[in-house]
Image (cartoon, rainbow over all chains, first blue to last red; front, side):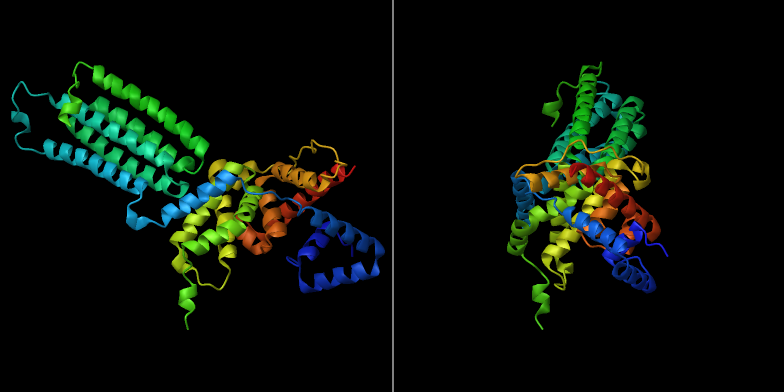
Length: 230
Length: 175
């Protein structure tokens, strides 16, 4: 029976062959010089294929050590984790404020001079986007292993804010927020670990946020007093 | 009796094993990913996963071996995320001829390593995984098939194609 190169490959690894096939190949190598020569050439080539070598890049080693040190300091409130928590708390507070405000029994009884519902919603959305931008910037600096979870938290925050906008009838704000949800979902599901892709997506998201903020700021419902409102 | 103490390596142990074996993990991941940035991410992910799961480390294997295995899995996962399901890059016939000719200088050995790395990059993802995990990492065909989500026969065929292509390239370099 013919011994193929594929048989010899499996024989070399002693894997994927039935015991009787192993014995058959052993006999062929012992008895047939041509088969023995083919096997010898194969093993020589395979041995040469181990020649891949080279050091790990020094910046990567530093980055790995730093990530390890950072992971080993959970009790010391790592800057990234603490920053993300604070930003998340702030974002949730904005949403909670919006929900409470929407559910207030006197909502319709505000004085005529007070900002309209849509102006208030614009303001809340702008606050939300500012928070989102800051958290995204932090997420981009996070270790790859934490990045995906951080971005998924932002998706949830954004969905919550979208619900608020929809309930106020602020269709334009809801549309803007839904678009960001899609972009954030792409970011979290596509490849949160690929630095290049993440940075490119972040840059695009950052640009869109700035356009949205500028449009909101320049709309007829002026929100120039935003910092004071904070 | 005090086996549980060995089962929880501390930060110093992680740093030591990183210093001694980090380059090897990186090279192993690089062979899988073909991209330095993905290989770096894979090692980092593996280190962090291992650190967070260090209480699961039983001490029945070396810490280096444990992290090495996690790093390879991370590399495979990152490639999948980047390039989609493995079937999408399957084109067994795709394998351009090597771009370099055989070196005849004292740097031959180092050059050979570079050529083999280039040649590995030209394999399909399935072929590269099958070859690297079998030949360089010593995994069983069954384990590789399980990771690739296929059967052992598919893994064998991918391994055969990989070896054939790499040997063809080797012969081309050797003139």
